Image (cartoon, rainbow, N blue to C red; front, side, top):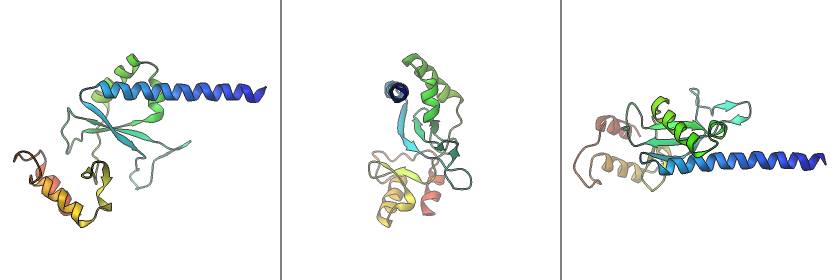
Length: 161
């Protein structure tokens, strides 16, 4: 009998987690300016993954298209455990997204970019991919000749690879 009660409790917890994450993802998808880039295990200042009492703290990395990339950053990290705790319905998800957009400090994703159709670390790239990134940053791959914001910073970062 005890095992059945534990199984029911675990099932209800799993359903709550799935519901919270599903509602949060749907709210992001309905937003015109937010996109989930992926999940990550952020590093602390010492280069090692951040840990909590339960292990690594996994986060969603969210791109806010209302903000420019560069010094301020257009990305926000949101703890998955925090989403599960706070998002119980669609209204709460919308309210939480407003808090994320307005109150969360942005992060700058150093050394991660998208060339081959998915986000990857540039330190794993061969010289050909680095050259493609340099060409794109110089405007040779774009549809216009307009230079992006923070162009000099981007070129310095690429040249350091």
